[in-house]
Image 1 (cartoon, helix red, strand yellow):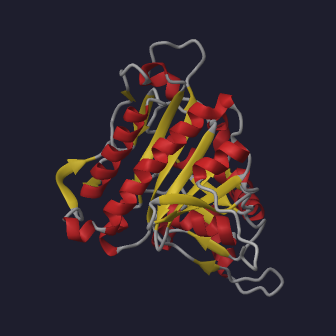
Image 2 (image 1 turned 45 degrees about the vertical axis):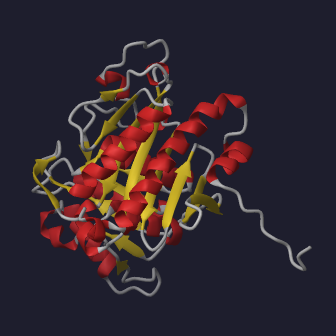
Image 3 (image 1 turned 180 degrees about the vertical axis):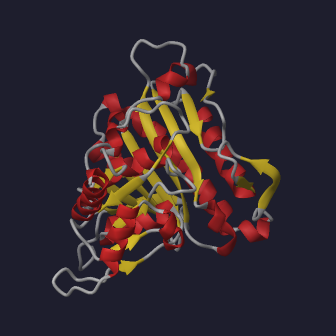
Length: 341
C-alpha cells in the first residue's frame, strides 16, 4: 500500500462512460468522440515531427474553399480525421473547412449513423512553420429525425442544437477540451502511452478579466464603436484595472484556450476588408461558443448570440466577440449603443 492517496487516473473514454455520458443511449456518441480523439493523437504526432517528416510548408498551388493557401499539414490533418470518422462508422457525414461540399459516408455502418460532424482540422495553420500552437475545432450535430438521404440543408442547424463540441490544442502538451452540454472538461495526452487522461473537470471561465485578444493591425479597419472600445481598454484607470493587456497569438484555439482558463475577450470583428467577418460560423464560431457558454462565458456577433444564428451555408462567415461574460456584454453594449446613435 502507498503511504499517500493515489489520485484516480481516468482516460477520456472511461470518464465519459462513467460520468458525463453514462448510459447505453450514449454509446454511439462516446464512440464518435473516440474516433475524433484517435485522429487528434495522430495529428499531434505529425505536428511533433513536422520538420523531420518534410510536412511543413505550403501545398503547392492548392487553396481551400475560402481562397486561403493550404498547408501540407492542413491536408494531412483533414485526411486523418475523415478517415477516422469514416472507419469508425459513427458519423454519417462531414463538413470540413478543407472541402467545398459535404462529404457523406456510404459504408454499411456510417450511412445510418445518427451524428454529423463539422470540423476545422487545423485551425491557425499559418503558424505551423514557426511552432506556434495550433488546433482542431469540431462540432457534433444530430442527424434530423426521419431523414434517410442527407443533403446540405441537414447540416444547417443553429449552434444551440449541438450535442457536443470540442477542440484539441497542439502546444507544449496536447489537450482535448470537450463539452457534451454538461460543463467543460479537459484531457491531456500522455505521449508515452498515447492516451488522453482527465486533467481538468467542470472548467469555469472567470466572469471578467484584464486581457483581450484582437489583431491590432486591423484597428483602423474596424467599425468606429469597436475602435472606441479598444481605446477604452488601453486607457489608464485604477478602479477598473485598466489598461488591459493585449494578448494575440493569431490562432483562435490558442487565444481562446488562454481566455477559457484565465479569463479574457477574443475579438474577430467585421472590418472594411472583411465586412461580414472572417471566421466560419459552423465549425469555428459555433463550437467555441458552445464551449465558452458551457463554462459560463458568452459569445455574440455584436448583435445577437452566436448560438441562435440560423446558418444559410456550410461555410458561412461571422464576426465573433467571445469570452468572459462581463467583457462580452460590455463590448456588445458599445457596439449596439454606438450603432444606434
